[in-house]
Each structure stands twice: as C-alpha cells, then as structure tokens.
Length: 109
Image 1 (cartoon, rainbow, N blue to C red):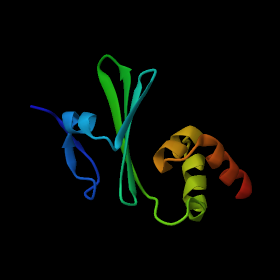
Image 2 (tube, rainbow, N blue to C red):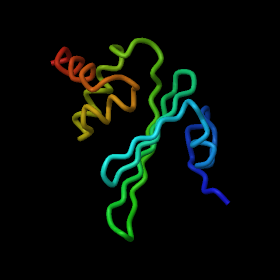
Image 3 (cartoon, helix red, strand yellow):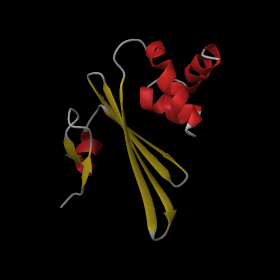
Image 4 (cartoon, helix red, strand yellow):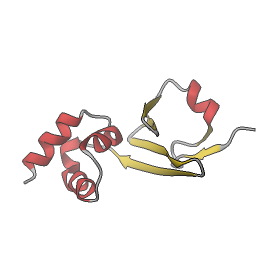
C-alpha cells in the first residue's frame, strides 16, 4: 500500500504513485533532497524530503497562495529569506525563477 503524502486540502490527498502520474507535479532531486511541487488554482504546494542520515529523514510541507501578482508577496518572500530559505527554495515555492526572487528582494530594500 502506498504511503500518503498529506498535501493541502484544496490539492487533496495523493499517493506517491498518484503524484508520479500527475502532469501538474514536478520532482527535483539535488543531493540528498527531493522536492515535489504541484499547483492547483492559486495554491502552490511544495514537499521537501531530505535524508539526514541512514536513520533520519526530514519532511517539510509548504503551501503558498499565489493569487494576484507575485510582487504583492514581497513581505512574505522577505520573511522566508530572513527565516533561512535560499532564493532558489523561495522561487520553487512560487513557481518563478531565482533571478526574479533576487530582483524582488533587491527592490524591497
């Protein structure tokens, strides 16, 4: 039986096999980290799974309401950056490029 990944309510509950077959889901593997992104309407969901050791995995889930213009989210983007996320991680959450996040952060100073 597949393990469920608990996505936000308006994205639904999907098994890993469902996610693999879904054309709206992207997967990215970098080192020990796998990032799964999906978007439904104005909600972008991101799940990060990172292997810390042979005994330990961390799993984090983020969802962002990306309605309106991305520039309207400057305060949230700045808070995410101040909380330690990289520009690339923020860009992945919003479905934009890292350079666009960099530009927004520069403009917000």
